[in-house]
Length: 164
Image (tube, rainbow, N blue to C red; front, side, top):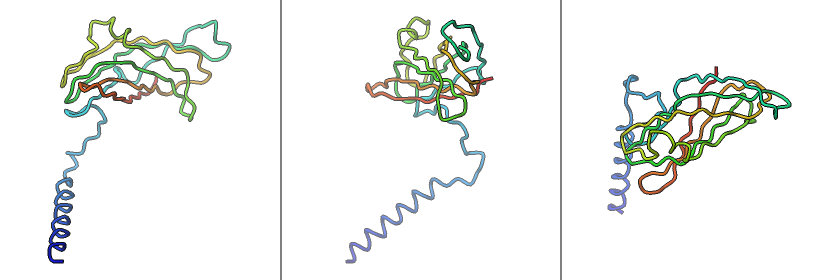
């Protein structure tokens, strides 16, 4: 009985210490960024907000087709990354998504930047996606970046930016 009480007391103390270590009263130490850290991979669109340009598309009986250009900045965390693909989708603020475009690794490979991103480094990729017909006015763009880490495990990095 005495041994069980010591085990419970010890676990309680460990829990208390772990919680106390996570408390930091200094508001300046709170991170407001969801970007990459030294441990996790991350990505951003540049510039933000993204500017869309409508263009004529004979296949659009309604709405407009859009094109844009921006840079995708990818930072590897503590392990190497290999780019696989990026899926972009226009959003109008409702629960319904608009047209999407998938940029395969072959298109990334045609650029001077390598598909391979060494741990702790950053690469930029210039993109010029063209989206199909969109009935409303897009308000944001969402991206799902699919990468493989140094162990061959798939990871998804979610990006989002306002559209101007």
